[in-house]
Image (tube, rainbow, N blue to C red):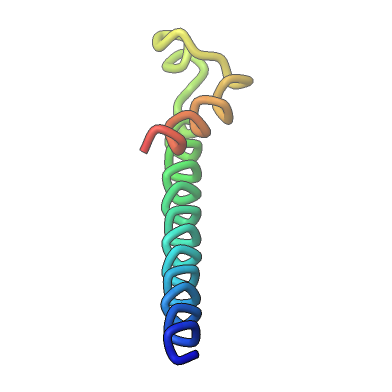
Length: 69
């Protein structure tokens, strides 16, 4: 019985650390998304055109940047 209890404690600790890692990953990706979007939105239409971008593309590009990290 002691083995089953200690195994449950280990599994519980692992799931908590996994949850913490997932939360940290979410906030890290969210920070990249917001920073990228803010920097792209600060560009003028001319600068965006020089990069081959349109304002309607900015959210998707920021999302891709966050997903690639």
